[in-house]
Length: 314
Ligand code: ADP
Image (tube, rainbow, N blue to C red; front, side):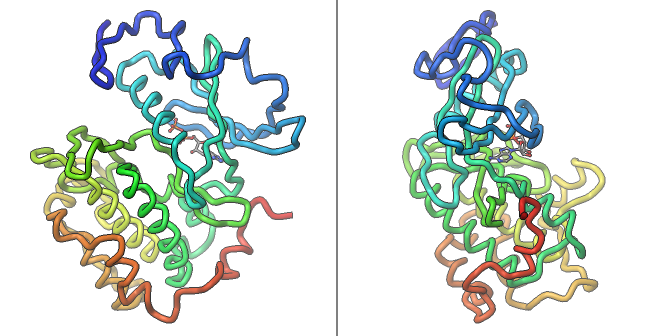
């Protein structure tokens, strides 16, 4: 089978025997190198299983994301893994899950990441009644997310899969953006991407339209969906089937439920962000200066209400 990945024609028939990053990743004999001891299971994604591991020499803990090579034989899956590693390993920011190293054996690729023992904002919101965030809590996390996005966009990286499930929580319940499997690094600022990707509830209308390509504004759209979901407890365009959700996104059809009392400022910001025309969406700087984030209610430190719910405590 032949396929195009990064403009290079490659054969995937013998993927088991080729390196993921063109011989630049370290080969290990089989399994994790012996200095790492495998600990508890952290979670499973589309391709990866993730375990907590400890470096027996330094006693440091990491999250080891383990991908079976047999699960990435399809060109798209292979390209996704290659691109995830290539993009994530160059990112160094306090609000981005730290990438330490990667290596592979004949059967697996191992990605060593900063461990986020409190899982993601998605699980946090599901397990804590009333299953939504109070506005000061939401502001606190949105502020961190904007800092991460400013860094990514400065580096011409579009995340393209921003959602609560990709906003990880470290041991102090601070936000870290993770999962760069759908991220794209643009060659220049005006460049556009055309691949249809994302998670249904959070996907921007211009990705669904697919006519003119998309750019950094798709992350701004997802940020709007995230703010809405944080304060109302469910995504704005959610329905029971994906086609109807896509139709609602294209028609920009959502409302603010009366059952949840939120400030006019947050509604105004959501309305400003969730605009079909990407050019009309505010910049990250405008969002930071919005009356919602500039209101005196932005907590200087993490609200106690969040810290009490850390799963990794004690
Ligand atoms: P995939 O790329 O296959 O979708 P993910 O990146 O979603 O894999 O990782 C799978 C799961 O592993 C996540 O849903 C999460 O539960 C867990 N996980 C991933 N990265 C970390 C991390 N840095 N710290 C803790 N758990 C993690």
